[in-house]
Image (cartoon, rainbow, N blue to C red; front, side, top):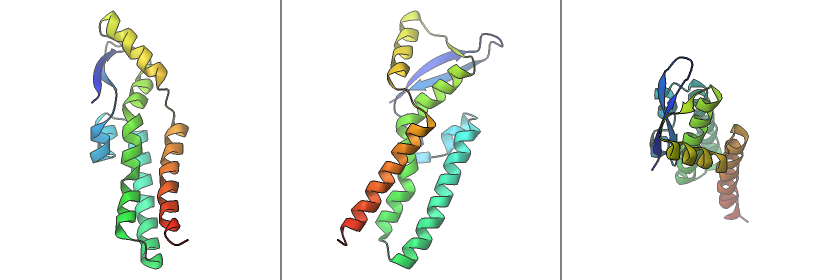
Length: 145
């Protein structure tokens, strides 16, 4: 479960919620959490990945007779991988935009330590995503060898 942290932009006074921890909403609803948090870059990236992957896998599964369970596993893979990184990535983006933690000093220190331990970047997320896909593909191909 994610921990909610209030974050404030010192120049405008605007307050947003930052999150630290696992994102269950990303697991089940894929591109909707970024859309509702107005992170359109991540939303568009996930929509593109899911659409391209679905089109590729459905066409390939028809031609290569891939089991539907494997197709389903590959289509749900983006949400599974991004659910581990999404909250930290979102909070780091808020920090990069100039927001600061607006909680008690202890909670602010804890949040900074937690984010420092879990540095996430797009390359790391996409690398994990590609790794999961490769494991699924090799597991499928291993059945034929």
